[in-house]
Image 1 (tube, one colour):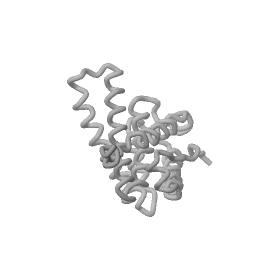
Image 2 (cartoon, rainbow, N blue to C red):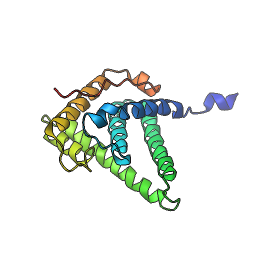
Image 3 (cartoon, rainbow, N blue to C red):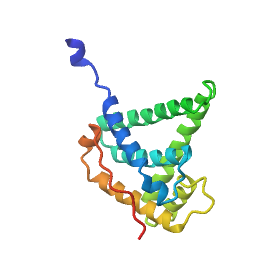
Image 4 (cartoon, rainbow, N blue to C red):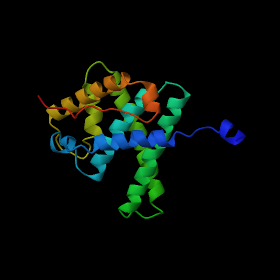
Length: 181
């Protein structure tokens, strides 16, 4: 009885709820068919990373419970990438190296997307999207970059309006994918 009273609750279920919502949003076909995001392992990773960044950005600086859920979300993403690499046949000895590179890459994306969203214009965000989300695409139409940048700004603002308590409880709402006007 006393153990349960003093046991620290781990935010695994909450992070899994957020991760499931992130993956569902990232898999929406509109991103791939309408905006030229490569429908590949890399492209899908990029879409998951983009949405995970948006959620972790919202949780940042919002207290200990939010920080714990954010860290668990990051860990869940990495664990899923580990599982995915093994499923596609990457050898057990190579997986840690791939995971280390993915984690470093995810951190780089977080930094560049954060910088892009903080800049008043879209040049920095367009460059980050071109480099990451569309990194394997030779020529990205400006309309795709503009739509995805607007989508990120819209979703960032929408997440700012969602209660931290809901996010820390594993519930997040995303809007529909962007529409090129």
